[in-house]
Length: 108
Image (cartoon, rainbow, N blue to C red):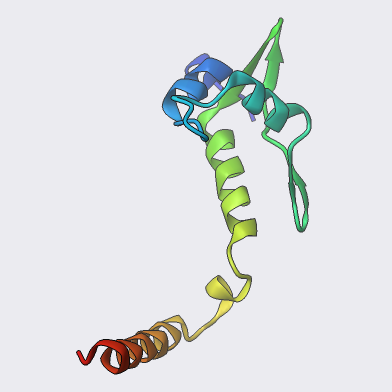
């Protein structure tokens, strides 16, 4: 698949767009470089950010960046959360349980 130059962004583009952690104003470029080179360890293996090397710079497609974030998010969610065919029933049951606990604790 060929990407047009407008689809590709340097690491700095994503660093400006995403807030940092631990009080940092923005994501550090070394973090994104690490995602490209080493990936992120998850219980199911390592997930790497797909990027293209262009001279001395890494360029990342928007779609690849979003796919990377979706993959990380999916490994953080319980496996059965999306696989249940009775999601609405499951949610209703948990909502009913929470309502009962509120009534018991706070007389609501």
